[in-house]
Length: 161
Image (cartoon, one colour):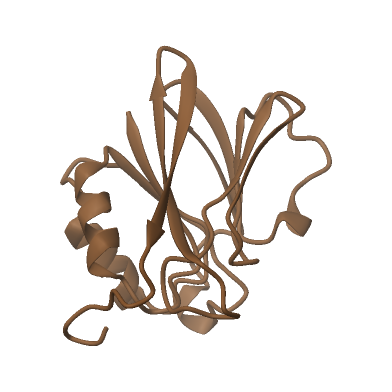
């Protein structure tokens, strides 16, 4: 299973991100989406039957009140916990195998306590002079592999969105 992992799009869904989403079997978004229109645009670019998990970020205001602060789910037999800001993680993660978060706009991929901790960075509007990144998580036979996707700074949708 190929899972597109993104966060902090802040109202911009780049063409390269759309292409990656279209090739994946599921999409997870760690918050700071910016609008319902962005969620709709992500869904339009996904495979029709692909699961989509999204959490509310600190910049997702009234429009996003229906979005959860955290999500717990299972994909390809792996247990996930996702939250926008890792400071809001519970102390006891139980048997969670993969932790997804965003907020800092900094890519992070590490194994701690036998878990994968993954912040895909930001693949939306460039902020704080950070790199523009996302990830693809591949899960097969109970094992994961992470592919970091670096997006060139000059790559912007022709429509300016």
